[in-house]
Structures are given as structure tokens and as C-alpha cells.
Length: 134
Image (cartoon, rainbow, N blue to C red; front, side):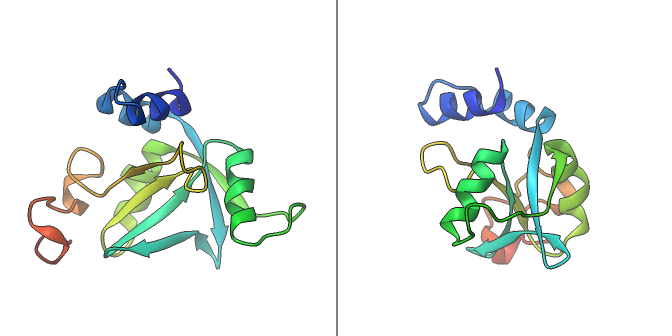
């Protein structure tokens, strides 16, 4: 199953979270670039890197943020595994990945918890951010 199909399956309660993570790790996603780094937002003490499954999803996100429909945006194509295993450990503070966030029924979060990001940069989900942040 491809990443968008597995996201849909998990959201409908019939998918497999392990398969979803595997599909994300194998998928090439688009990560917009802004201000010299990957575009992100902070919410709840977690930095969320934006990633998109295709140019249409990226365009919907940028449009929702007020970008002109014909505006060109720089982005990188990157494996989900590289985001989780190399990019996130290079950043300060708890960081996860938000996929297709402009698509309310197709978005998915990959939080900075053990099993998703490397143990050394994971947040203990039982301790809260104050007690579990790296």
C-alpha cells in the first residue's frame, strides 16, 4: 500500500500503524524550504516539520497560507526515513513530522516518540514534554 492509502486506512481504523510508519520511511516526501531551513511550526512544545505526499498537497498547504496559486516554492524531495533518522536528530528540541497538514481528512502526525525517531532524541510519552524532552 502507498503512503496516502495507508494514512487513509489508519484514519478509518482499519490500517496498521507499523505498516504506516514503514510506508512513511520508504516514501519520498516533499519538504518546503523557508528561511534557509525546512519549513516548520511549533505546537505544544514540539516542532513539526512539514512534509507532503505530492505537489498538489504542498500547493494546497501553501494556498491555505496565502501563497498565490502560481507562486513557486523551494522544496526538497527526501525519504521519510532520512527526515526521521538524520534531520530530526540534527535539530534542537522535540521534533516530529506533520504530513499533508492542509488536507484535514488525509493528514498524519509522526511524533517524536520512541519507535518513530531515534531513542536519543525521542520524548518519553508518559513523562510529558517537560520531563521527557531531550
